[in-house]
Length: 156
Image (cartoon, rainbow, N blue to C red; front, side, top):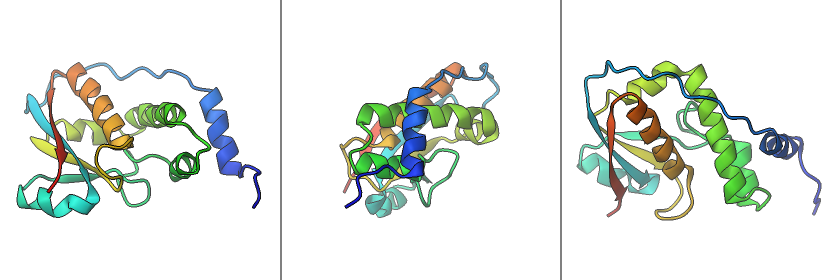
């Protein structure tokens, strides 16, 4: 087995070393909703969300909305043990900060939802970017005068 790092893994490690803070855009207070119910869910439980009429936002690395999904290379590096939870968190937050700048309309659209379930393939209650995204979405929403109500993990 080859223990050398692939070019994408080397790029991930470079990103970790070059972490830079990117400020959130200034708040805008022109959204209709003041409270958004935010759930988290493993995609294996999608039927439960459907039964409750809770819309899913797929934020998985391969099939999800690329504006909110982690880089697939980062996921693989984490799963293989080459990237720690702390480094994965920094990399994901960095990607989301860039996403805020590149896709502001996608982020603003989230603030018009009444509720949403953040979906990923990871099982419930383990380290997962959907919980990181929920944290970042809450900070973003609060800057815009929108309150996030954390409703927990949707399970059977």
